[in-house]
Length: 424
Ligand code: AMP
Image 1 (cartoon, rainbow, N blue to C red):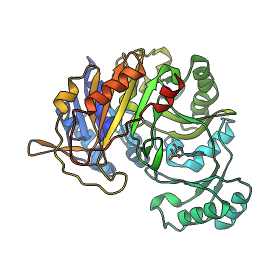
Image 2: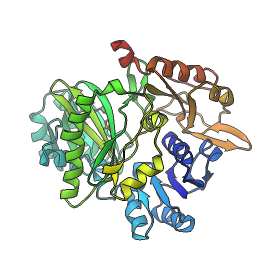
Image 3: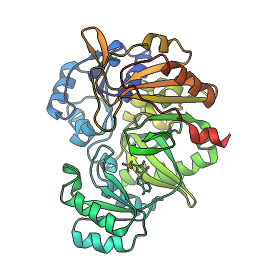
Image 4: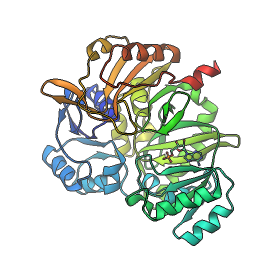
């Protein structure tokens, strides 16, 4: 079978790597891919903003399965378009992806279905904003409604700052498309967990839990990024808590979407805050997380293609996933200056030595092949990922591999997994 993967980051490299291991897969095509993906798949240039170009590519390639990596093509309706053409595609329809593409929709949906989440108000006018902000206690969270590539969340220390931030979103001063409505939220405190499940529209199967590190600086300081590292262990969520989250969050979400006529097929990513009053939904994503996927797939012992096809065919209830015990960790190597401005085109060395470290896979995010030389091409450059019997060992392997890698301006956090290590 030929598999087409849409996307160009570390998540897509991990997906391509896992798909290529399936016995049923004869060819992997990735659009547009990157310098690392090109080593295991045929990469085809296409813009992820251009729906008709992606559709033309799928029609020409006729893959047996298309996997959509990022949210942008989902929001454009790539799944609907490919389904209409009789192509098998893994991911939610444009309507179902609203769980991610509209934070206002997600909050109102959670409220309609009694799924635990913080207090909120969805505002479309300045008058509504002033009234809503008055009843929230600082810190107050202000969010743009639509996709904002992680830049749409502002945590405000006073009502005045919250009002100014929300009005800034309305006026479009901060963001482009994402400011049609603004969501005001109660600030939730606790530990964040990424709880990803597969869904076939009726049933859900959890993937192993993970914890992302969003801030650029060690000790979780400085600005937010796309994610500087992640780890996955079973201890993050014990079996009783996993059961609770399935019963009270993931299953009612999938049932609720089906009842509202928008069955959700794909990866339901529940961003949870483990608060004193129990797990609360912070946000949904409608796709695999990045870098969560890199750590999660390194622990998957089952055939990924079989599992994704079970979702498309509505047969997830009969699917059991096998996982390697122990842990996986992914440490992101970024370009100096990220998430602000940074240089690209820097030659990367040491990857062959890094790959020699047992249990290590180096997934590429922002890399390109230029005249036979691998160079940096983005803010997040590599996800150095390792699996082992324990988190300590997985981290030791990832950092040992990282020490082999060099490019000008290379930066990485040296404290990935610090919360879990402190608990031991
Ligand atoms: P999001 O773009 O919704 O994923 O939010 C980005 C990050 O902002 C989350 O991972 C949290 O760390 C933080 N955040 C979002 N909403 C809240 C909230 N209601 N309370 C506390 N932190 C939040």
